[in-house]
Image 1: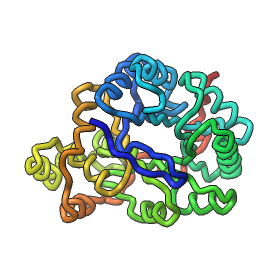
Image 2 (image 1 turned 180 degrees about the vertical axis):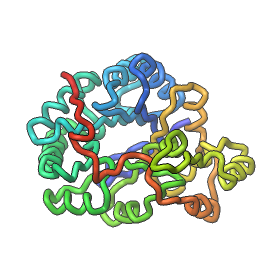
Image 3 (image 1 turned 135 degrees about the horizontal axis):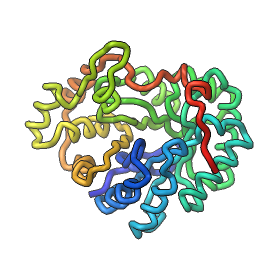
Image 4 (image 1 turned 120 degrees about the vertical axis):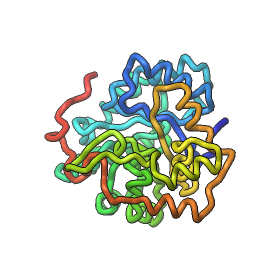
Length: 296
């Protein structure tokens, strides 16, 4: 089973569903990637900060799949923002991945306290795009205001914004901004893991997979709760990159293209929105909060 594709604003096709490898240890990432590809995944998302780009590349090579069939994403880390630094970091990532061209390069955070370096990094990404070294460029965790500022200063509209998005954090204002600019929405923590496993500011952890709205739909369609949530993303036209290191879960996560949710069901899941972010606040992320650097 393979994922359908979405069309980016530069005409490039991206699979709607992919594999995320955040917090996948280097020792397990090779097998995770090959398992995913064997089960029909064609989108693999990694980042310099994840520390497993090399293993992602090895997993791709081990799979034996033709490179043209895959869509590979990696991300520029904060310590490498700036024009020349970004170009060097891209070369480093490509060396680790073992690839000649990248399908998408993303800025990992907006870093509003150092936005000039963010803009310079974005201009470097545009140079890589113009040179054909990357097929599309985008950002992660940008708010509508960050997007407006970036576009105003550079005239370059991101193809995609990868953000925290799940039934407990729907981000309606952000997805409306994406529609206005023609930016594709991609969800990290799409099943709500960031809310399921963490307790923040005194709030108990919440698990959308235990909510009756989700579990009743799972019973109705003979699917898992996670499959219902992932299908919800597809109904919205989002891309989603669920992470798992378990072969059974990897197989289940892509098995969502043989049913559809009704509009009323999608809206019922939308209504679970708590407005509470589980991950870091993009306004607060900078090189002081995360002060590690990527090694060559």
